[in-house]
Length: 123
Image (cartoon, rainbow, N blue to C red; front, side, top):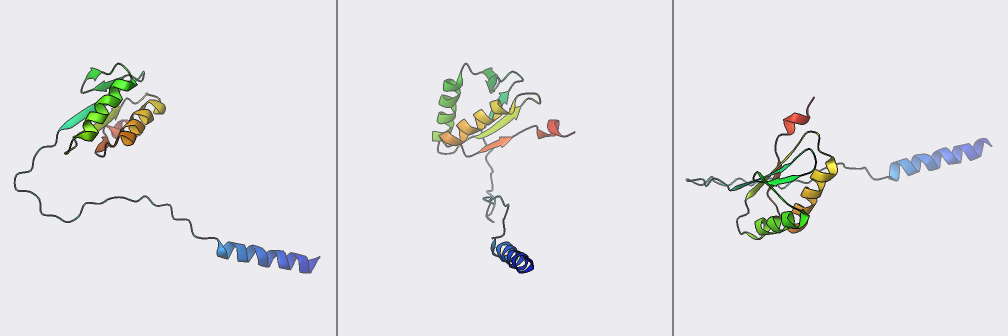
């Protein structure tokens, strides 16, 4: 019985050694070191608010349905110089409502999107 246990321990040690190290990293596209333009242009900003009941507001105007939101996001994505999209969820909105907006933006090709007002979630 003892030799069997020794063989099993050796096999377990070999298994542990051969397991690759898991790297939990997030790849980021960091800006390169470029000279700043002399006359910086203020970016166009689109504010998307997600209200407590899941209502989506585009620059303060309620969006009727998901198709209308996706049409507006497609318009933003097709512009040569995309405007910045600021997503501002309410503190009590279900995550699935916010995730649906972010997934639509990503699927349609919006690259300049950011979360605004995250300090409301810190407690």
